Length: 173
Image 1 (cartoon, one colour):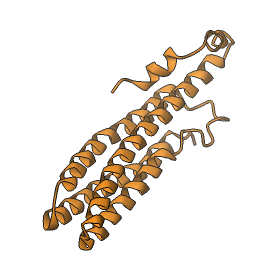
Image 2: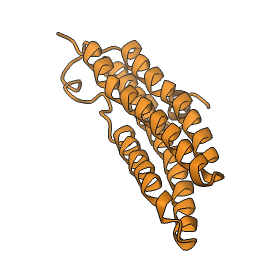
Image 3: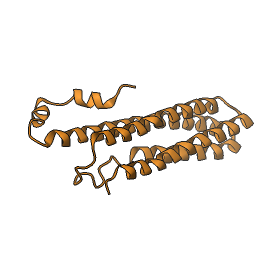
Image 4: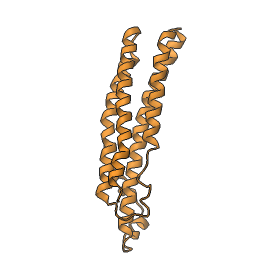
């Protein structure tokens, strides 16, 4: 995956680059650029989870049409868990809380937050593998695949919750 911080820089207007000549403004803009890149990354991760949720919903429709009701409950719970995790990623703090007024947060710390969010991509890859397995499974194998998927989603959920600790470490005293 390309570094979104570079992509955001590439799409700046000449006026935005001109603003960097104002003393003290370049540092502020650099922080905003990093926050925007982090937001784009999290939007991308949420989109990946949307795709996986759609696959499970298609499987849910197949099972419903086949009147395989015993498998719908675990599948519905997995879909709900994907939605919960997706929303937590998508609507997580951007690094704005209390930072507009605080010049002590530096670009390196925002880069650390971006790298932390990027580490979630690996977990989402594992979730994609588990969704693929569940989408092709039947009966007991499906229930086992869904339990495995739920475990991976819970791990990602914990990673997202620990993101708050990362932000807290970045906040100045």
